[in-house]
Amino acid sequence: MATKYRQISPITYQRDIFPTPFTALAFDPSSDTLWTGVNSGSIVAYYTPQGMRGVTFPVGGGLAVKKIVTSDSNIRAFGVASLGVAAWGKGGVNKWNQRYAC
Image (tube, rainbow, N blue to C red; front, side, top):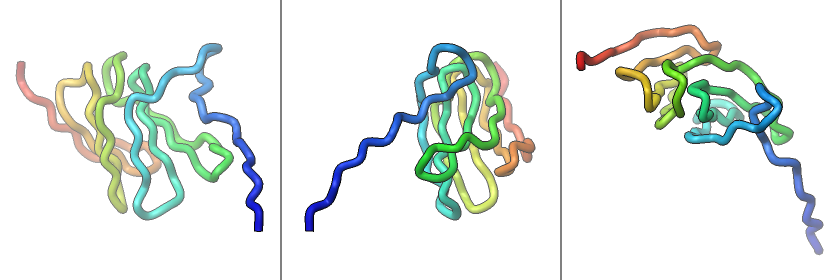
């Protein structure tokens, strides 16, 4: 059996005219969701193989998201410009925020 190669269009964050590059990626362990951190400091969820855009929320600061960690109930993220680590529910509601003193 021969398998046909079918290229799909790339997923980009379409907030602006120009695509924003992804700086962090995390696959959700309990759903078919790809969580992406973008260069503008936001987290965006993509659903389905077609890349339907879902919830989006800011991490803090206007710089890139450095790290995303997902669990069954929340998303933890760290941004380059943020002063700590925070966790959000999968709907984008902030659960907790730990800031450190400079």
